[in-house]
Every structure is written in structure tokens, then in C-alpha cells.
Amino acid sequence: MTSESVNIKPTTFKAPAAEWWRVIMYFLMLSLLGLRFYPVILIVLIFLLWRWRTNRYFILVELMILMGDFAFKANNVLPFKLSDIALVTGVIGFIIYRKNREVKRVTFAMLGYFAALFLIASTSLESMSVQFVMMRNYMIIIAFFIPLLIFANQDFDWDKFINTVVIHALVICGFYVVDTFLLGGYVLLPGALASKHPSTFYDPYIFIYNMPRHYPSGLYWLVLCIIPLTHKWVRLSWGQWALVFLALFASRTNSLLFALIVCYVLFRDNIKQVVRYSLIGAVALVVGYFLDSASGRHLRLADNIDQFVSLEAAQDDEDIAEFGTGRMAQILPKWELLSDMDRLDVGFGFLHPTLTTNPIFQIRNDYYTDVTKADELATAVEVTQVQTILDCGYLGLLAQFAFYIGIYFIIRRLKYSSYYLCTFVGVSALGIGGFAGVTQRDGLLLLSVALGAIFLANKPKRTGTSNHLIKEREFE
Image (cartoon, rainbow, N blue to C red):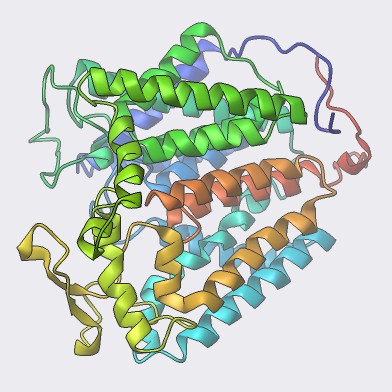
């Protein structure tokens, strides 16, 4: 048993009805913003200002959700990216926040990581001004200063933070369920649109009775709920679990399911539980495969497993290209060019989809079934780890891994340090499937929330009591 666990039976998660409704109302405002109803922006700002005065925990989570989109809006809804606000605010925090020893060490490691990225980028044939447009996505981890700024002169209660994360995650699950099974469209979650046709306030995209698939970015917040569940800080009711499972079905994204299962199995209190849940997971996978195959493969589980079987029997590059729902088709020609240019160590540089015009980075991808997409730039693959290699090579991937694992070794003696590690594993597992990862704003904002919260939970209270001295969590 770790110092983060206690032998106290948790009560079923509850929150005041007023808080549920306030979260729902805030998310409805974000939905309107995603539907391009721009007058709601003023109401959102007023709501956040009120949250600042009444509940810092809620504004922390709700501000991060706003800046990371998380299925509520698409990237092009506003003329600028809200994640840039997170980047700028993080820089301000880096300059003005009074740092303790652990924060200083993480900050120095972060600066070293950024310096490595800039050094590698300087070897590229692309201009640095163009590269920085893409490189800034790698730098959003600096947003961990945002929680520190929000609670700069406030005490921080870990239980209240966890409850705030859980209530927002459950409401997001509710939005997935309603949007999929009742509205049958993309009204509550316009940014989860699995189609090129935008859903707007005046032209909502609705498929009544069709239960369309919703992309899972809003459900990434479930990763932050894994440790509270496995360490029994909170317990969900059967109805709340049903809400989560229905939301996962609405997404039908096995990459998300894989990430959640990996975290849930690995971050148990003891090795016996890890073995037990691994065996249960293996049996469930086999049963799920046959059930999905027999029911029309709507869950996409059987298709994903069959791809591994077909990969083993692959006879040529065309067979390999079909692996990973076409992800290998994205990767193969770009990897070939990277190898031909002898830049596997340092990558192409941080190429931009439209700003990069150098013909040396243009390729013909004959692996695509849609020939209209064959001419493309040698970047933009869904597997985030491979994207890192394309951007900054093996050296960049090594620096990235060393930095994020290094953070854990810096904070490992702090209470709740496993919360960061679990979030990193979950975000990285999502990256394998083309979601989140440590190269994209949503994944890094989640990691920033986890890291910032750990620092806050371990800072001395204003009364003089240090959280470093607390060996067990206190429950009322």
C-alpha cells in the first residue's frame, strides 16, 4: 500500500445539485460557442469571472477545457487558438511565480527540453519562423504554471480538486450520451464531429436514430479519474458507471478504451490486483472480439484485432499500409523520404501543413485509396510518437521521453506523484492511436493540470502546515 492510499471505504460520489447544473450550463455555453453562436463568448467570460470569485477549483478545470476545446468546438471556430492563451499564461507564470525546489527543477528540465527542440529545429531546411508555429504545440506543458497562478494565494485541497475533475468528467460523459443516443448528432459536442460538414447554430448537424460516432477528445478527462478510482478516493454508483460506459460506446474509439484499461490495470495498489485485472482484461478482449464480430462490428474492436492478424500475413508494403486503419499508409512514404534524406536522427523539422512550401518536402503517397489525397506534405501522421520522429528525429523523441519521465523522478517523493505518471501513461497510450499525446494541446493541458495540482497539494499551507508532512489523507 502506498502513502496515497488509506483503508477507509469511500462513499459513492455525490455533489450538490446546484453544482451539477452550473457545470451543465457552462458546457452548454461552450456548445453554443462550438456551434459558432459568437455572442455567447461574453457570457462565458462573465461566468469564468464569477467562478474566479467563488470557486478556484472549478475555474481551473473549466478554463483548461475551454483552452483545449475537448470536443466542444473545432480548431477553426475562432480566428486564434485558445491554447495560445495557455501558452502565454504559462510563460507569464514562469516569469512571476515564486518557485520552490521541485518547481525549479522541473522548470530547468523544461527549458532544457525546449532548447533541445530549438537546436534540432535549427538543422532543418525550413525557416524557424514557420517551424515555431508547429513547435509551440510541444511547449504547452508550460501551462502547468496556470494552476499555480490560480492558487498562488490560496490553500489547495486535493479532495476538492479530485471531486471537481470527476463531476466535470461525468457531465462530459452525459453530453456524449445525449448527443449520440437522443439527439443523434453534433449539437452538444460540435467538436466531436466525425464528418467534414460543420455543425452550426443555424444549421445543426443531426442524425436522428442513427447514433453517429463521436470523436473522443472530451472523454480524455476520464484519464484523470483513474487514480481516484483505483486508489478508492472516490466510488461511482452503478448509474454513473453506466453513464461512462455509454459515453465510451458513443465514442467507439478503441484507442481511448486501451489507454483507460492500461492505466486502470497498471495503477493498482498491489501486484496481485495488476495480475488479476490483466487476466480479466484478456478474457474480456476475447469475448468482446466474438461479440463484436457477431453483432456487425459496430464497436470496431474486431476490425482492430483483425488488423494485427493481417499484419503478420503481410506480403508487401501495400498490405502493411492497411494496418492501423490506414495509419501505416500515412507513415510509410514519409518515413522513406526521411530515411532517403538521412535525417532519421533530427527529422524534417516542424513542417506546417500550409506554410511549408519547399518542394523537397512534397511527396506522392500511392498507398492512399483516395487518389485525390496522394500529393501531400511529408508530415501529419496520426501516431504522435512517429510524428515526433518526423518533426525532430530520434534525438527529439529521446529528449521528449527523458523530459517527461524525468519529471516523475523529480516529483516522485511528493504526495500524489503517481497521478502525474498515470496521466502521462494514459496520454501517451492515446497518442499511439492518434489522439492527445505529448505533442498536442489537449494531451499536454491534461498533463499540466495533473502536474500543477501535485505541486499545489504539496505546497505549505498559509497556516504553516506543510502537506509534505501529511502521511495519510484525511476524510471527514
